[in-house]
Image: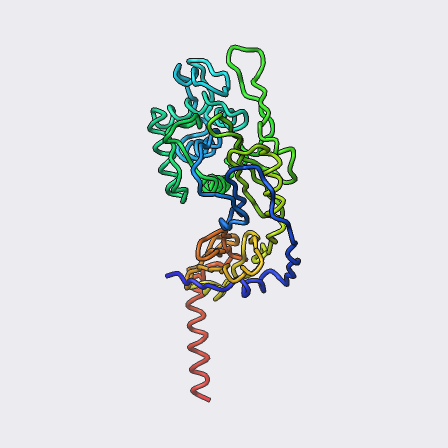
Length: 383
């Protein structure tokens, strides 16, 4: 039996200490050239600015974010992929793969995200799903699952097709979902990478095409894109003080400037609030048959939330612990969990762990305790 305890975020602040939020900065609305755009806080999905964000567009190579997500969730990074002739002859940007070449799946993922290798996306799709068509169905299904409901994928690369489309909002949702996976974040934030090149005396030297990794303080992703049909597209992201913001520009004349303007607009709208401090004791649980009757539980990690003005009451915390546990218990054992929710949806969590070890009472110890209480009771009745 587990007990669940919910509190408004104002109640949780007592765990982390006093916080005095800085006054919200007045920031002018960004002037951008993109036909569609959005800037969104990744954890909560809060829209900080949008311009026609639900309009349908070709995504070009920003498609590869979903290719990466599906590959990470359905593949094994250490798999050896054999490149088909079909993959090696894929049009557009390339990793220069040769038919029959063997590469680790992880290397192909770096190749498709850093220099947008279309051939790499086909090799990945064929390895995981058997064909690009089958893989694209997985991509669309995943998009629908995470709420990107105005998106349809028919290939893994982003080459133009009337039935291959998305929106700025959907791409922000896809990127935000991706950042929950540490490997996604690692790959899209990598500036440079060397990959093996079979049959050559040198490696493939890759430099990430996403200039935001160099241009923007805290920049950590995510993907560029361009075709004549799509125009210049960029999904960018940055993290500061534990706050992750995603910006999307589609069909933009000046995509770097647009993206910088959007991120510069987004960050001042939020402040980071530590609501759970690592090591803070949040709950005590009863212990059955232990040498101690109760056990304090502490958080094994700090939890910060990105708060916008007037939105603190949209956050709650939920603590889930058993009504009681049985000895023995070891220090550091996971006993419960604390979750942070935004409008009822979980955006972060930490384990509640035992602060100390509690041994189980021995048979003789338990028997002696019962005899002690019985003798004490008898003595009182005889006086």
